[in-house]
View 1 (cartoon, rainbow, N blue to C red):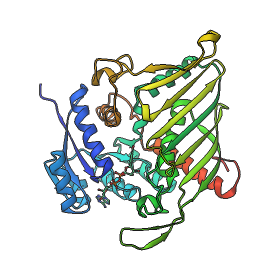
View 2: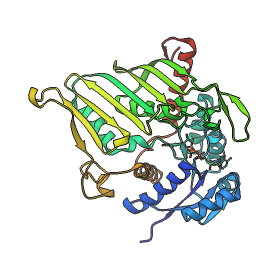
View 3: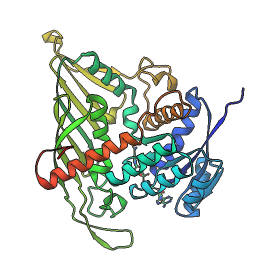
View 4: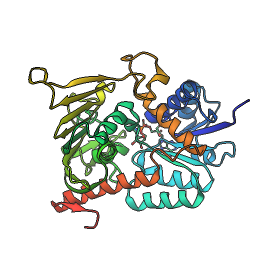
Length: 373
Ligand code: NAD
């Protein structure tokens, strides 16, 4: 029997717009889905950008007006992959038009706006998803199971970092990523490591943040010099509700680091180490190994780690970045069909935004803060 179609429209054809296009396309091919997925339309700020993306990604329709895309009655899901400052307006318009919304992280530029988005989504009874693809890695799911199973014993510490180096040059242009409305390394990269920390160890309850701006002035593409007030690096001590303590770092001037989405978890009987630059490997240290064999053992991604086997029947052949997006797409599509709950909905995105703001406030006040402070 012919499957019902689910039509997607993407706003933004940059890095993430393309990753969503790949994710939809891969998901269609590797998973058994309740719908046939179709990327039907793409929007960007100009016809030149939108038509180029449509041509390169084989999307039948394009527009330079995202509002037209949102109003298109043939589209079921709106993917928002535009700069952060647009997420709220675009999501609210899409929700109003009755679409399901798949918004890139961070959900919005403020907790207030994120709440509006959550309320509107609930009132409209549409499904929502926020793009936190790193937690779709089967080895992170394995790590979470190992922690739950007690393989590490009592968890005592967490260290997490998301570091890249795309802003190391003072000549890197001032863009939306530096905009005080939602910009900075903490919102951009820190939101990912906050998500991973809570995915593995549960809710964070208190933070002591330190947000640092290292490069104070940058030129934009028209040559205008801007004072930069957003952070280049943020470090925070964190406490989880379960009593575990730890730290996180968000850093976009970490020279040499391209995708250091890494964590270490220390337990009484064992430890785990993971690095996104080697996303098909999870390292496990067991304290009760014989003294002469002690050391981190490498667990290699394989078909035993669902859904790796959908992509490749052989272990060690490796998943990639876009494959994680495809896994995220599959989860969201299943939730639209009512087969499961949303993998990471707007409420969860709001929670991440609340932690981002808590860390910022804590940095300004130079003291530990919890959600009731
Ligand atoms: P980008 O600058 O590469 O792309 C943004 C695109 O949006 C551009 O093509 C731009 O022209 C377009 N755009 C801007 N304003 C628009 C408008 N009003 N209407 C239509 N299109 C518009 O940025 P990016 O790196 O793709 O980031 C986009 C979003 O994805 C951000 O929210 C970012 O935080 C997020 N992101 C997520 C991940 C992840 O791993 N989940 C990685 C990178 C970026």
